[in-house]
Amino acid sequence: MDNLQRDITIIDVAPRDGLQNEPEILPVVTKVALIRRLVESGIPWVEIGAFVNPRQVPQQAGTTEVAMALTDGETARFTCLIPNMRGYELAVAAGMRHVRLVLAASESLNQANFKRSVSDSLADFAHIAGQAVRDGVAFGVAVGAAFGCPFEGAVAPVRVLDLVRRAVDLGATEIILADTTGMGAPTQVARLCREALTLLDQRAALTVHFHNTRNTGYANAFAAWQVGVRRFDASLGGIGGCPFAPRAVGNIATEDLVHMFHGMGVRTGIDLGTLLDAANWLAAHLGRPLPALVGKAGPVYHSS
Image (tube, rainbow, N blue to C red; front, top):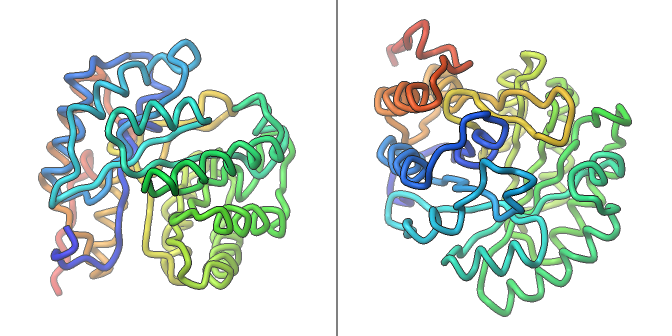
């Protein structure tokens, strides 16, 4: 993976964030096949699922079996979402060597999502981080509602940056700034990402995670790229959303993001044709057209 020529890193979250809002519950064998199709297209990182209570998120049932069917290889690496220590223990037992913890920058969304205060989530993270260090497991921290909360509205950047600092102090190797319900605007994204990059000072990688709820997701990704962000979450087909946040529809689509960057001359290491084939395959399994647009209109291949 590291030997490929790549200017940015795209992490596909379709098996986790993408599927968690879908009415169709895919069997383990289909989830594994989806992940392998993503890897075949050149996706360097895949978020394979979440180790959560399947009664709360039925689409994530079987994540242990999915993880055990996969191994980190030369062409891809895998991560997963965990909400607590129990999720961490399940992930490690299934062979995961990289995990993502998540909390929200607003109290209301954190309570809705995890039934915990932000301070309680941070205390949980401290215990998990200590265990991860002992186990040699790398972990990232996703900060949800980083650009706005569906319950509280605007979220102060200083609050987001304080959570970023706390996460890095715990040993996080990746910070994910997530626009959970697509409330961010490009200038806001540029300011916060620039401040986060300065704060991180290369101690941890910065990833951005945008939803296209209000059709600003790709503009926000471009704004983040302009100020130096080089890691982007996206979901095949543009599926996904948070089941605990109102109007949290649609991640930015991996194929549309790849198409945009390729048109800019930015190397992703991803084969767009193979990725579009994977999107068509996923649409057939979900039984509906997917929100992504490049597959409908067809790609434009720009000359250099």
